[in-house]
Amino acid sequence: MIRDLRTILDGWEFEPGKISVRKIIGRDGCEKIQTRIDLGVLQMECTGRPDGQRPHGCESLLEYQEQRLRAHVAASGDDQSFELSAEDCRELRHEAYLYYQRYLSLYVLEEFAGVERDTARNLRVIELCARYATAARDRSLLLAQRAYVMMMHARARAQSAIARHRPEEALQIVDDGIADLERQSTDDEGDDSWAREANTLRTMRREILERLPDDAPAKLQSELEWALAIEDYERAAELRDRLGRRGNCTSRT
Image (tube, rainbow, N blue to C red):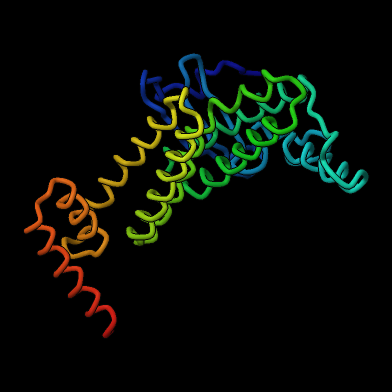
């Protein structure tokens, strides 16, 4: 039997600094995601746990632990004595890494609904470990990744809105994401990742605004805020008038 990976990798060279992804049909007839890495290729399922396993008969370890938590609350009336051991947390972190690999690949493939699903799922893991891990180290390890996962979740939702030709909805999603990150930054002053990821969303915000028509209310509002910030009151008055006219037009239609 031929097992040499070159039969898979010939013609698909690794490019440092680039995430190279493709979809294939597996032997089971289902789509798989393949991501090129320096020593070979990662292959992942498109849904469920990326490695295709079903730990404890559940879709993932997260679902298993959440099931345990629900059973505990049903039996005791609250979650006060529910705990995750160091081994539980280690396994959950490994599983979160698998989902991280997949949502990066899905983002490159522009399958943003999958990115939204997997980032939301990893945010649940972060919160579960932060709340129930018995060791302080296990409560804090994944928290360092929360800003990045929140940013990717907002980006995926915004990209989905753009794909549906709803740029103003995308703009609102990005603004809400920035506000969430800024609130966390205030609560966690020693961690600059919140500000860094908020800046990533601000860059996306500028890109969305550039795509809008010049008379789009969201674009006019952004320009008005900038005019006020630099004390260009003549420009601000002009923009207010334009926004007012747009509002009247909208109310008549």
